[in-house]
Length: 156
Image (cartoon, helix red, strand yellow):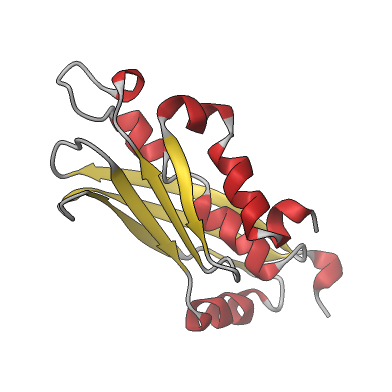
């Protein structure tokens, strides 16, 4: 597995300098040593503001797009196929200033994924991440459905 998925500092820097994120003011603020917790922030500036002076909805979604999948790749390893299957965002209030989202996996969730996919069956866990502003007001909720399946050569 590449250093991208084994070294949190490399992951944090690579994702923060990923051009669509860098241009939108999105940065990975924190990655736990075990990849179970990732904190993403987006500061507001002229390139990610909409016509009403608040965060552009596409940027709010983009800051949440890959993290659950990328965390699972780091947590489960190369024996699994892991993709985003579906997503939905609920905008709850205008986003202003710096917003943040916290992505977390606990041991019980990982055990469940391993059990559900041990025989090669697909499993589609659903996750919800909240986007909050600096005052801890809820700005949006992103609902993600993932696709996880153990690779054929890893079963057995």
